[in-house]
Every structure is written in structure tokens, then in C-alpha cells.
Image (cartoon, rainbow, N blue to C red; front, top):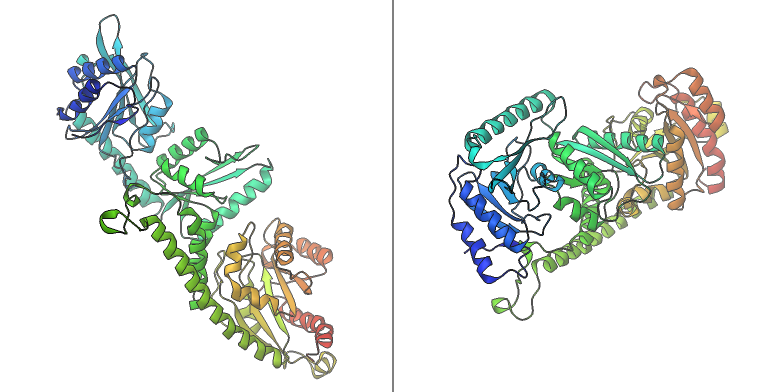
Length: 561
């Protein structure tokens, strides 16, 4: 016999038996619930003073019987549903209400989040002494943005509705609208983006949300909706509060999203609780950036660094056993010494982390040898740094006539690239006598971004080593971004964190083909820098001359002349 789920402590054995016997019932598929079963549910519910509910399949079988308290029922965990197809779960939830109260918010949230066929509450008409039923079902996308429709209480015996015909027609309507929507919009994964702020700076929050949109676009995901919320204090469990989170999940389901992406790093507790509330994928900022890194990494070192960062992120989140991981795998018959599958998973992750760290350490030694040869050649090293998508790779290609990969997306470059920039032929013979520079090494590096986790940045040891060996920084700024000063500030903060703030630098505004002459002149005055268009080639000759001038004094001190 199947078990009765939920709050059964204190219920008499005879009452438990009656609840178990409900599993024996076979319901006509054309009925939501027959009147006699409704009466039986109300009778046992009133006896025990608790709500009683059943989950019924379309074939008419009772799959689950659950007991709650006087006001609500917590549904059993009946697995995950593949979402995005416009289909429902194939289960309807019928339960008692002891005070003839209407369908509750919890009932309707379950309807949407669990993609139930419908929810129904049964109560007793005290005057006629017969069961009343109230029904709630999902609505397809509509101009009024309504998620559900509620049918007010009526006598079950007078309910004129063929359930199986009704639900199949409704599901067909959902499926048709879903297919049309996806054909019109995109075949990509679809995401709702969420930013929660505790500083009430709307401009800053909207800027952060716009950057999240760029990250999502870079990852190849379509942003179908956004949510921005301000709170005095972030909720330690739900981040934005339980009610708001439920609203967000409902909004995401209605938008036919596949993913909810948070612009914060979720704690392991938050990630678990939020994931338990929805069948949609849940990602935080670090997971999104790691996904982009995984797509962008080209070299074996880069791929190992991404995998290492992913494993380090995953390890503290391996903290909870689900039903499939609760068995012991070691020892005879499950007794004696042994590890749970979860413990084995943790151990294997630690072993893989150790293995990758060893391999990367060996790669570090090889890179160190290559960099030593550069230093022995006494060639000045200039690292191109800046906020992500500032145009660093495009500038490297323009200055050195190379062909490194470029794209108008965040983190297009993860692996550092070093190229020679030769001045011979670019300056007159007199210039060479003055500056005494024939060539420098230009290094393209990974872009910085706000709130980039230190562990994640630390994984890119190759890039950091290139920065540490640089004699000079060419700090490239995207002049087309309206708050480029904020990007400059973030890059400077990262340099301080890395202990590299003492390395001299030249600020260079890029993308002047997208701004006015007035904006260009303002930057040059304010930062004593240069302005170029790496894509168009404007200002590159002036930049080479300025680099030679700046490096002259530095290389004199370093003995690299």
C-alpha cells in the first residue's frame, strides 16, 4: 500500500487506513472528482481537523494522498518536469478547505510553479449539506497578464465539465502559443534576469542590470524579462523575500523562460531553496561568468583554469542529500565503513581540484621560463588592460597586424596573447636616436568586470602572471559607455587588490568613432590620455609614439635600453 504523505502525527491508525484506502479509488477521467469521493475527503478531513488532498492522474488514478494542517498542505516532492514545451504535469490537485475559504495564494502558486492541470478546493455547503468545489486553472499568455482563472464555488453534482476534454484543449492552446512565441522570438534558451539591491541607487542598479543583459547575450541566452528589487536587507534564504520570489517564478513560467539568472552570487542555502521552488534552471552571476569562460577558453591551460574554477564553486554546494543519494555504497550490505554517494562526490571533486592544480603548476613553470627569456632579451613588456569589451584584442591586432579573435561581446579573450610591436620604420631615424626603442612586447589580457569573484580571477593565473611581469600598462577605456569613469575605477580597484597599482600606465579612450569631439577632448584633458579608434585605426600612430616616449624613461630605470 502506498504511504500517506505530510502531517500524519497524532492521527489514529484507523484514520490512516481510511486515507490509504483512497489509493484504491479509480476516478472517471471525465470528472474532476466524483461527489462520493468529495464527501469522503470532507468527512475524514473534518474528523482529523486537517486539510486532506489528493493528486490524481489524467487516467484517474490517485498518485498521492497528503495531509496538512488546518490551513494548508505541503505537497510531496513528485519529481521535476521538463519545462518550456507548453505542457502541464498531468496531475490535478484536489483538497479540502475546512472554513469554506477561497483558493489560497499557496494553492495558486503551486498551480503555476508545479504546472498542475488544475487545483480544486472542496468545502461543505452547511445549508444543503453537499460538497462545493472551487477550481483554478492556468491561462496562456494574454494581454491582461493574468496567470490563472478561478471558478467560484458551485455544487459538485451540478458541475458540467468534461475534465479530460477541457484539459487537453487547454494544453493544446498553451502548446500552440508556445510554438508561435518561440518561432517569432528565438530558439535560444530564454532567461529572466534578476537584480536585487540594498543601496537604493536606481541608476547604479539599472546599470548593473544592463551589464547582466550583456553577459547573458554573450552566453548565447535570450533575456525575455527582467526584475529589479530594492531591499533594506537581502533575505538570507530567499534573497528577495518568499512572496517576491514566488511572484518572480510565476512571472518566469508565464514568460516561458528556461532559466532564472541572478546578478548576485547565491549562497549554497539560497541556491538550494530557490531551486526547490521551481523546475526552471537557477544560475547566479558566478555560474553565468563561468559558463562564458567555458565557451571562450581556447588553450588547454585556459580550459583547465575554467574547470578548476567550476569545481571550486561546486564543492561547498555539495551539502545536501536527495532521495537518490541517501544510500551507503561501501561495506557489505550497506553496513560497516563506507561513504555516501555525496561524500564520494565531494572527495572526487577535491581530487580533481588537486589534479588540476598540479597540472597548472607545471604549466606555470613553463610559462615562467618563457617569460624569463623575454626578460633576458631586455624587451619592454606592455600589458593591455581594461574593462571587458573595451577593445583590447582589436587594439592588439591593429598595432601588431595580427589576427587574434575579436568579438563585440564580454570576455571575448580569456587566454593571454603576446605579440611584438616593432617601431623600426614607424619613426624617423632621429626619433630612434632619441627613444632608442626598436620593439616592445604587447600582451592582451582578460578583461575586468565589476564584482568578479577573487577565486574566479585567481584561477586565471596565466593572465595575472603576464600582468605582474609588465613594465607598463596600456589601460584601454570604452569611450562609448556613458559611465566609463566607473569602469576606470573598477579596473583601478582590481589592480590595487592584485598589488599592481604601482605599475605606470597610460589611459587610452577607445571607440572615438562612436562619440563626439567634445567628449573626446574632455577625456584627454581629464586623464592626460589619448583617444583612438582601434577598429578604424584612428590615432594608432600617435599612440605608438606616446608609448615610445613613456617607455623611454621607464626602460632607462629598468636597464632595458
